[in-house]
Image 1 (cartoon, helix red, strand yellow):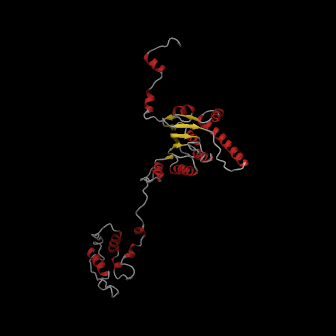
Image 2: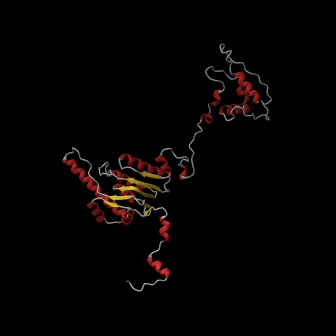
Image 3: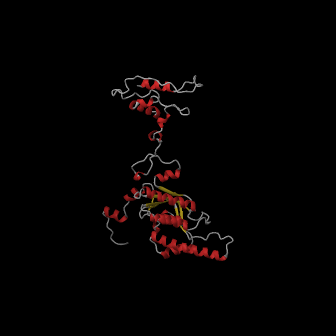
Length: 326
């Protein structure tokens, strides 16, 4: 049947020598025992590229219904047998997205090429800029996507941001940008692990403190800072507009004080007094004592600190008894 198929294709295509006389090509009268014989139902694959979909389709038709290949009408604008490819199985693209069972089957096995998407593939949201509207939009979208992907797995929020101001104190965004991310964090079902690396200033310090209790971390040389919201540049605004903006900034300050008091465990008066005195900088140890974070991420710190005992326990194990307070 393979020889019949080759002969059929060779005799169906018009030769170039007789291209001036376009007509119906001569059909080949093939007498093969395979036609109608059950024993020869299988036709060997053509020797040229056996994985080719066209040759596979042609061979399967020749095996199942060889009469459809004989006495076919000739269309001068279509190569012969090309209409056999018009099937959904052959026209569908083989490039489909590979899926895995993890993360509810939504995560692709190969990470995307750009760096933020690779971090997102590891459930990491990195805030490395001031909280301008474009950053806020991206962070909220990433948080919502990670919750949709798996509402049970934790989300890791890495923070290195000066909040709604630059490092020189110039206002670059409204305080509502930080509150938008904060409200999104509070609405998520996932655990939020916050990690401060570099700086967490102003609204970024609030985001650091708003992580899940016991899951708020800070690198040893990072800095956290609490400060009052600042009035945006007024320019040529009328005095009434400047007064309205100042009143709005005061409302944002009161909200920030309440939220920091809620997440750090300090009183509202303590936070308000700290803000009133000016910027309050904290290193990792001071931030832990103040309640902004829970742990400092030293390499191997947990194992080392677990082996350290207090002086009283050391004296007790050594058999030393204290006679008096002195």
